[in-house]
Amino acid sequence: MPLSRRVIVSAVVATVAVGSGVGFAVWAGGDDPAYRPPSGHVVQPGAPGQPGRSLSGDDLAQVSPPGFKAADTLFIQGMIPHHAQALEMTALLPGRTTNPDVTLLAKRIDVSQRDEITRMQRWLAERSVPTTGPNAGHAGHELMPGMLTAAQLDQLKQARNGDFDRLFLTFMIRHHQGALSMVEELYASGGGVEPATDQFAREVNADQSIEIQRMQEMLAKMG
Image (cartoon, rainbow, N blue to C red):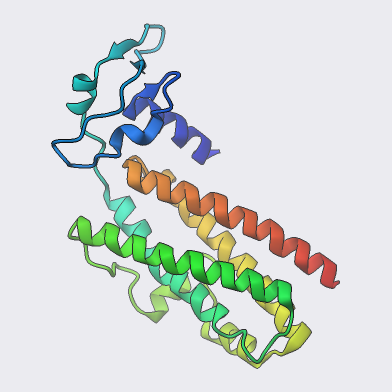
């Protein structure tokens, strides 16, 4: 699976901490010249068949993390409106459902994706990249994996009670699956090498995979 391979590749690019718990934390200092990695026995993997070498704190401080690529930018620019539509969907719950499980799930999605939008906007601002990309605009949004069309959103707005619950879960599962496809596309197009992008993409993949499973279980109980 691309994500599993990406974890291995990122670890090789960044350096692997053996027995010290450093891992990706080597980049925690960002561009701060005063930052020094945690002390401990840190090994840089060697070429295939060759032994690794121990790195000192000074060695690690001189290593620069991989920079972001166009694929990273497109991923973030696309994921912001993708998340925004999920918030539009969760905002429809009041007056349309009394199901406590659906309500709790929607609240979780709303809080997590609202925070992630702020995080993505900050990512773009720190790199002086525009918030919108080639897919800006409503028509472009519909082309992104899993996003609902205007007709589907209207269908959800018209539904009530059990019908709303089933439709909301069905559409949100599809929406989450679209986000997973966007993560896969990020790595397939050569992105996700930059540690910050890689970490965010893996978190999206893990969190939304868990929520998909939960929603599928809820739908099955509804019959």
